[in-house]
Image (tube, rainbow, N blue to C red; front, side, top):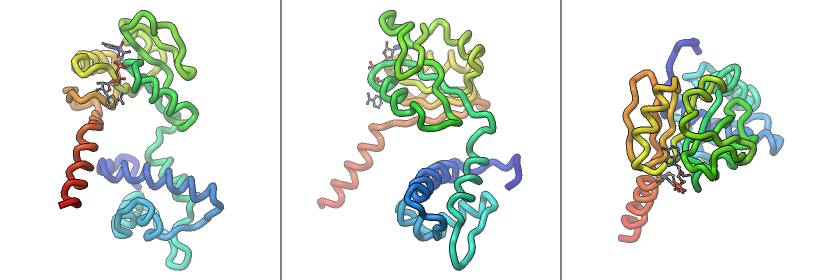
Length: 211
Ligand code: NAD
């Protein structure tokens, strides 16, 4: 794959999912896998799997399929940054704390290195190994710790202000967990994750299946 080629959003999402499933395959001693097996694991078509894997310039053999470890390594080269990326969580409430604990030790190339909050009782405490700084120190710490990604887990009413501040602080990517959409300049990659929409989607299809 050419270095400067930008993959579609959905392909990047699926590559991440492929890698997680392939890692489980390795743990179970599986060395090769066919596209239809990956497709079955993720409830998608094998055509989709082959298309994504072709996009990253990899192909398997007709007889054995894809080499699992080679594919894991190639996906890593494509979606991970060589020296890793440093992440901050803004808002150390229920969700912020859950994320910090969940991520601990999960991804060597994606490290949560700082958290920020406005609540004096949380400032200077350590959550799952991550120091919580006062929100006012955000710009300073982001620069000092070379943080490129911010995860927003503050109340919805604070989201816009926090996003604006993150951009001013030089952040390159934002994952917004609040139900309030935010605006950022085009050079910052923004992903909004709205759990309510996902749940309402499931509820709609449950209702349809019951009819
Ligand atoms: P919470 O009230 O437990 O935590 C919010 C935290 O943000 C608090 O620690 C608060 O002190 C801090 N905060 C407030 N203003 C801030 C600011 N300007 N800068 C830095 N920190 C600030 O809330 P929660 O349940 O963790 O939810 C956080 C956000 O995530 C909400 O927008 C919520 O809608 C969304 N969300 C939560 C869940 C969940 O399971 N808890 C699920 C989906 C989405």
